[in-house]
Length: 218
Length: 244
Image (tube, rainbow over all chains, first blue to last red; front, side, top):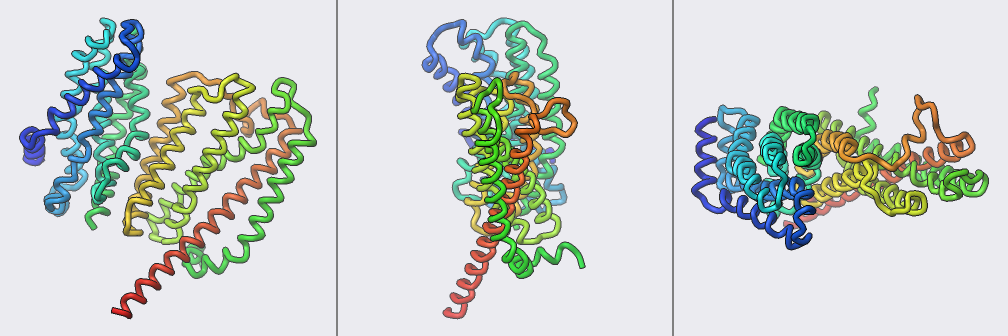
C-alpha cells in the first residue's frame, strides 16, 4: 500500500499538469473575484473565507478524474482489483495521494491568497485549519464520484454534477468556521462538524467507492 | 407465498394493470375535491388572507418530493440486495416524478412567499435544502442517462442513491446551522402543539392522500413502460440475432 501511495505520488508529480495546475487554477479564481465584485477591501475581507473555500473546492474538482481514469484505461485498475490488497484500501490510498497532491498544497497556498483578498488577521489560522480539516473529505468524496463515472467516455461533467452537491455540508461548515474565525468569533463548533463529516466520509465512502469500482470493472 | 413473487415482471404487469386506472381516477377525485373544498369552502386565514390556499398544493408536493426520494432509496436497497429488476426500474421511474414534485413545491413556495415574505426566494434552510434535493435528483437522473448497460446503470445509481441520501440529510442539518429561516414550522406533525386549524386540515389531508395516490399511479405507469421498453429491446436483440 505504501508502494501504491509512492507510485501515485510519483505519477502525479512527474506526469505534469495535475500538481501545479490545481494551484494555478486556485490562484486564477482568487484573482478573478475582485474583478467581478470590485476592489472594495471591506467587501473582499468579508467574502474572503468563502471565496477561498470555493476556489479550493473547484481546484480540487479539477483533478478528480485523474484518480482512477488513467489506471482504468491502461488496465492497472484491474490488476489492483485482483491484488491481495482490498479495493477499499486502494481507494483510500488513492484518495490520500490525491489529497497530498491537491488538498494539502491548496491548504498551504490559501493563506497567501488570503493576503490578496485582504483577509483579516485572525482569519489566517482558522482558514488554514478549516481547509486542513475539510479538504480530506473533498478528496474522498471526489474519489467516490470518480469511481462512479470511471467507465464513462465523457464522465467529467457528470462527475461535477454528482460530486458538487455532496460537497455542500463540508463547504458550509468549513466556510462557517473560517468566517467566524475571521470575524474574531470562536469557530470551534462548525470546525468540529466539518471534522465529523470528514471522518464519517473517510469511514464510509471507501466502501461505496470500491463497490462502484467493482461494478464498473465487471 | 411471499411478497417477493409480485416482483416477477410478469406478475407485476398482471396485478398492476387493473389497478392503475382506478388509482389514477381516485387520485384525481381526491385532489380535485380537496382543492375545490380548500379553495372555495374554507375561510381566509386572518394573517395570510386567501394566499393561504396555495397550501393545498404546496404541502402535498413538498411531502411527495421527499417521499419519492425515500421510495427510491428503498427500491435501490431492494435492487442491491435481492436483484429484482422491477425494483430498479421503479426507482428509475420515480426520479422524474420526484423532480416535478420538488419543482412544484419550490414554485408554489415562491408564489406564496412573494406576498407573504416580500421576496420570491430567500436562502432559508428549508428552501435551500429543497434546492439541494433538486440537484441530487438531477444528478441521479443524469447518471441513468449516461450509462448504456442497464444493469450497470441500476447498480451505480443505487449506490449513488444510498450515498446521496446520507449527504442529503447532512445538508439538511448543515443549512439549518448556516442560516436562520423565514419558513414556518411543520404544519402537520403528530406531536406538535400547534398545527393548522381543522378547517384547513381536512381538505389538506385529502389533497395529500390524492398526491400519494397520484405518485403511486404514476410510478406504476412509468415502471410498466420501462418493463415494456426492456421487453421491446430484448425482442429487437433476438430479431437481430436471428437475422444474422
